[in-house]
Length: 194
Image (cartoon, rainbow, N blue to C red; front, side):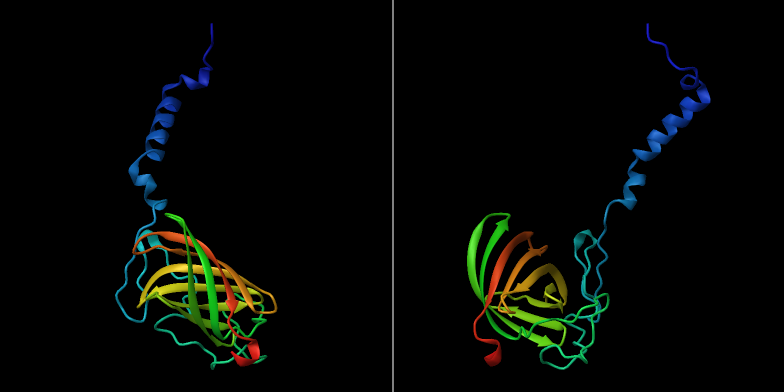
């Protein structure tokens, strides 16, 4: 015969455990866990996505000009907030893109990317897309937020290698439909002529 511990059968403790289970399992307790969209409509602030995703880099975007003049990183270039390393590369110019979308279905693609650099800050346009990328380069790392007009639609993260002539990256677009993949960017011309 199995014996029940005496403390478990006390009515006060039993009521407390039932109330705790009801509270933790109620929809009201889940509000803190479920992200909610906070759409904004002013042109100075990008529209947030459903699910509460916001820009990783709110200090540069469609309504915020880069803080440095166009050109490669210099000793006087402004460091992006939260970054301790200057970009090691002159990434300006045309890049050949070879990529693979992995989600929701697999497919390969090729494109051209035009990258503009403002010290440690970057903007990029890819052929065939109505998306502009805004972000930063810190050391060998590239981080970009993707926008369609003023609406944040995704993110892009990569690592620069090959003497600044190659970028391996991953990307995700949240809207209009979710998609994700990876790509390799190869500089289309030597750095001196880009």
